[in-house]
Image 1 (cartoon, rainbow, N blue to C red):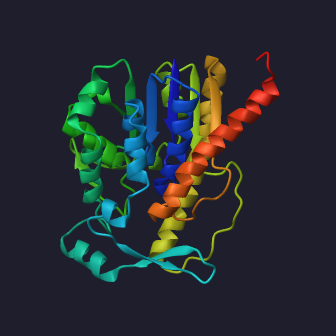
Image 2: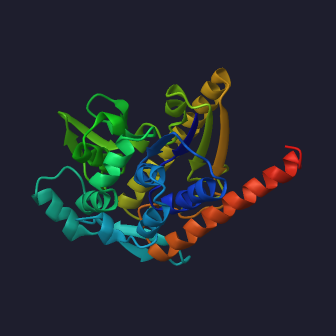
Length: 304
């Protein structure tokens, strides 16, 4: 069984979408299992339906307002030409006055998911032989949980997709089934092990980070940039651990892993959703997958 795994990575999901488009449309890979974390969870339902242009349109037109119902930060350019976040004091204060537990809210993202992945789409997938898994972090019991489309009704499954993407404390903290849930990337950034445990023998893994660290982070300018840096640091550690475990499990199960890392640093803040940049990333993901597979074919030779 062939599986597609897509890691978390916020706006960098556009690059992952481009890679997946090449694998599905150009190489003709027929995946029976899709496993996603965070932005990967947004991608996998439509990829499973082969609705690639539909999800591409979302990733190349989205902006901050598409995600946040209350955006807790402002985006500004630094003197090096990059983007950094500052505190939106008014929005954060309003959220606290409403007795919310996070700096911002992402209810617009929940609406976008429902608009993008309809009930008819859900029923089509549920009746198919494909399974779509999303990763969530149960903060109440300190557990990573994997939610299969086969196990839920439509609205519940939309909630799990949304929860998988909620990068707290900047986005919503969701209470469901008596527990508090947040972004799946807090526990499993690259869920290779889960794909193999569910029977995958070949896994294409899209990792929305470079294989080697190419940069040093700039000093934190405010508490938000510090929290963002800390989150990125922890995510990087979790990601590398997931990959090591995935390789170990694959070796013991005789499963084949094919990795697709980003070849360059796309952004140092994946909470910034710039539709122009994301359009470029989608195309670069497609071209990167094309180049990588061309190189592999040359190495294998004509008899492979």
